[in-house]
Image (cartoon, rainbow, N blue to C red; front, side, top):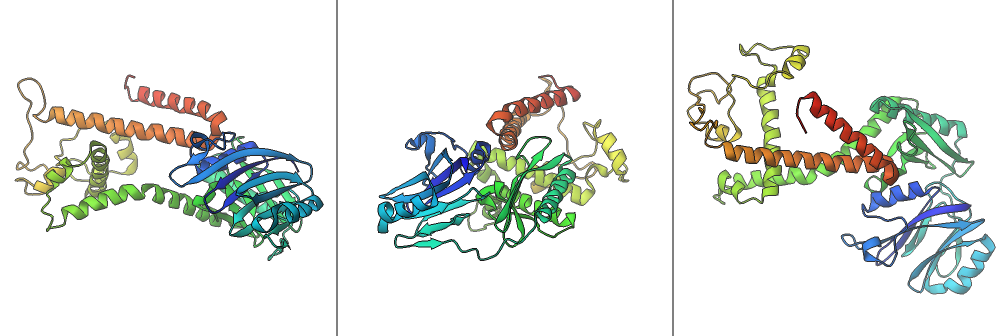
Length: 427
């Protein structure tokens, strides 16, 4: 077996160990389960190893073994030790006994793991000890795919990633154990593992194991499939689910506010409801309302595709003109003006004389609300920059891990600076 890396997750009622061929794979898995995971942190330190929110203790380490691995739970503690098959069988009967449980792995297999809790379970193990007897592993579905079939399925996934993301994806580290299983990695632009870590199941499903518990059965392809469109559909499905989960709380906050405003019994008006919100929530709501307004405007008026004479322009014209247009004479009411309507006879999206505009004050300010508007502007900029920084940190860590992410962050900052320069904004 040689050197094997592992990550354990211990809760009050069970412990699980996942095994990996490289430290990078183990670290990526640990971070996917807990963002503060430390591969070689102190297992007894709450700061290093304890996820307080989920009541889980994490530990990362490696074991060097020429034969097999025995994963056991005895006297309230879990142990991982190097052992051959014969030694392990003697050990569990004598040392683990009836109050414990154990699993024995005779060789490394991609995706292998062990679970010890209310019984013993896992994947890739040879046998397990249930406290009474040794139970040999029974494979319910025989792995009967050829290495060539696995290679074709892997290549199709790499091609789909290349076309979808406009990158160069390649299959590497393909492992094939005839009659037992297979797995492989996909690199992106030379960065190993950036395209995922895949396991071929006994039924032919090719699962991206790098996604973690968010999608434990992320089937990207199936052995025998030749249609790249199916892979595109699977990739989009899991990405879409991730986006939906991430945006769930935002949608809920906006929905809660709308429900409150529409509740006649509450007697809450929009001004008092917004004034009562914490500043951070107010900024989020402001962004949501702004996005909603723009969408509604585009749907009802074809957006900025309307000329001053209300004729439409084609996409090419729109793209070139939109970059230069900074203001428009076409009168557009703000969100609160749509609610109040005022004296406008057409709802605000027109050039009628019933819509009022603010003239400049004697001191040169545009309106009495300029200070408030600038305060809102600064808050919005801070919100969007914070979102961008969070995105850069999260994505570079996911793509390059702790070793390459700083370089990728620097490239991202360089791109931001060049974009500001292109728009003639000094920083």
